[in-house]
Length: 421
Image (cartoon, one colour):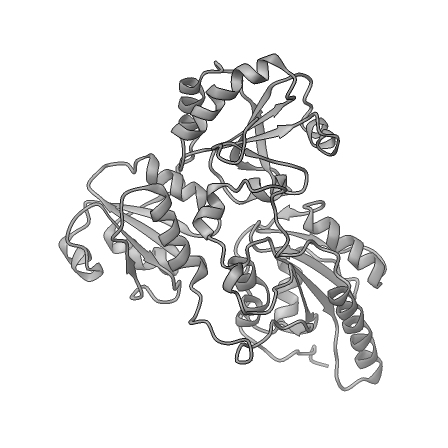
C-alpha cells in the first residue's frame, strides 16, 4: 500500500513530528492496517486526492499494523481503520500542529475540496509604499507577489504555507509603475524574493513557470539556502563546536538563528546563564565550572544526526524535492543539531535573555531555544551533564517547549554594571 511512486508518503515515529513540523499546509494522515477492507477501498481515492492537491496540501499514511508504529497510533487515539486526521496550521503551546478528525466523504474530490478549504491565508497584503517596512520588519527573508488579482490564488497560498516561519510572504495588488520599475518587473504577475532583511535593495526576480515545485525551489535556493561558492575541504572553516558567548544580536544570529534557518533538521540552541564578575576568583571558578558542563553537553549530545535519513525508505515528500539533496557533493563539516552558548547574567544581554524567556533569578540556569519552532523551555534542576543531556533530548522532542511571544532580539553589547553605592 502506497509504494515508492505514490504521492502518499509513509510516516513512522522517527519522522512523524519532523515531517509535520516542516509545513503549515493542510496535512492528511491516514492511519490504517493493510488487512482492512475499508482501507484498501480508500487507497485509490486517497492517492488521487494527494495528486490533485500537490502544492496545496500533503497526504501521508501510518501503518498501525507495524509494531513500532502502534504507540503513534495510540497517541492519536486511533480506534478503528481507516482513521483520517487533518493537521492544520494552528499550533499547540508546545509548537506541534493541531489535528482534527476528517468526517467528510471518502472520495478524492471531497478530500481535495476539504484540503483547499483548510489552506491558511499566510500572505500579508501590502501597499507599495509599505514594501520596505515589510522587508526590514523581521529577521526572516521575504517573498512578494505582485498581482492584478484582488486575492492570491491557491498556488501562492500553498507556497506561503510551505514556507511558514521560514520565509515571510506578502502580496501587492496593482502595484504602481515606480515600484515595478524599481524591482525590474515588466509584466504581472511577478514574484520577487528579498533574501536580506536588512537591505530592501537586494531583490531576486523569479522568471520561471507558475508552478509550485519550480517556484518553491527558487524561493528556497534564494532565501534560505543561499550557499556561498563551495570551497575545498582544506579551505572551509569547520563548524564551531565550542561553547560560545552571546553578547549581541549578531552573536545570537550566528550561534542560534542562522544555523537553525539553514539546517535540514531542527536545531536546538542551549544557552547557559551564569553571573561572571572577572575581578572575583570565586565568580571565575563558578563560570569555568558551568562552561565545562556546557562543553560536556555539546560533546556528549545524543540528539539525532543531521545526516541520518528522516525516512525509513525511499519515499520523500515534496519538501525534499524543494530542498534537494546536496549530500553527495557536500565537503563541509557535519552540522550538529545542538548549539551551546553562554551569556553573562550581569550583562545587558543576559538580563534581556532572562526577561525574554521568563527565567528565575536562581543561577546558574539555562534555556533551550528552537528558532525554527519559535519555542523555548527553561531548565530546572542541578546543573550537571547527565541532567542537562536528558533535558536537551526532551526539548528536542518538543517536550516542555512553549511558544515564544515576540522576536528573538537582544540589544547591542553593553558593559556589565553595578548599582551605585
